[in-house]
Image (tube, rainbow, N blue to C red):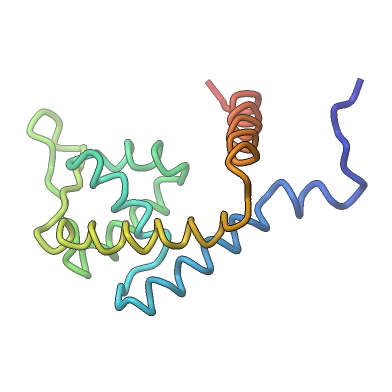
Length: 148
């Protein structure tokens, strides 16, 4: 029996990200208003490097769910902004590890604060129990569809 309770045409507009798009747009606007001159996509790469500096480009692909050409472009642009630097792995020179520069590290506090403010704006008026249900449902959807 189908678990699909959506009318025809609702599924993609709902499931593929009206909320995600709205949050990303607001985050970009909030970055700009706070003098943070990076894109949301660049921020997502920096976010993972703040958690674990020195990730390989492949690890960044996996962490951000992006393909290799997209990560290459994002890292190229972050290098131009002097926020990251690539260093060939000592074990395998074919692998580039991406490290934060001092400027990239410095950006963490202010950009995370802006991201937290944006998330709080997006969840205003949403009861905590609903947030937990949403997180559980989205995790189940992910588990159902992730590839091995």
